[in-house]
Length: 274
Image (cartoon, rainbow, N blue to C red; front, side):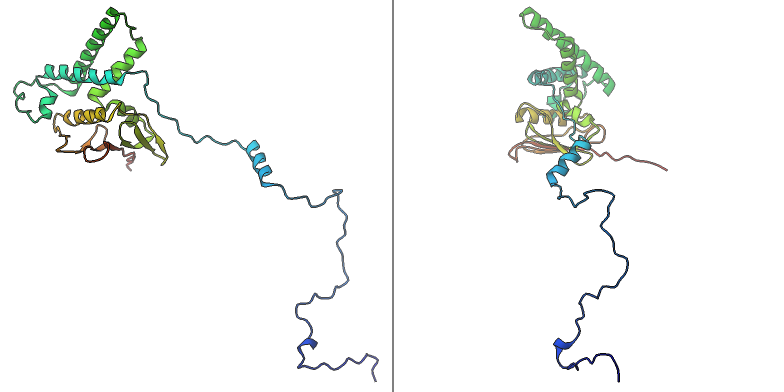
């Protein structure tokens, strides 16, 4: 005979009689964590608002400036006067060389080829600077005679450089091409200019002409300025593709689109050797 209590017999077919599988195990005696704390009154604090965290982070962490430096244009220059001086300098330079660039543009290069004076690029630029200084001196004398305000030395130097760029380089596009940050230049019309930088950022650029007609006239001058391979750019040949000094490529389209478009691509790849 045993002293243990008799447990009632459980019916194995009754599922309610089975012991629970996921019930909490009975507590066993042992060490119990007390409620003592060295921080008096340490209670869970309320969650911090997200705006407060952002304000605190902004106050302690300086935000770096990622805005690219904007391109500026010489707004104090009279670009219509620059275009007029460009034509005068080109005519004087052509007269010194014994030809006319407009004659070459019309496909009559053989007419004046026999009378042409050989002149390399350095000599042409030197003759161009001489013509620019003569024209600016004449213009200053006329301004003084009529009582108009004369140019300051800074304004005269800026005008001379703008004329030189218009005759021998890329005019108002030259500062954009010279900037090492610019990789591609997209132009739609005379004032819608988009610059793509080397880091992929796109920013607006300054105007490149005062009107679409002035932009087309400069592109025609640029196409026919080449001595070795002058190219037509007209309604009969509305597309222009040419290589610029420094390795950049220019593609222009006009007359078959709503506004003249120009794309200049610069390859900013650095070639390293072993």
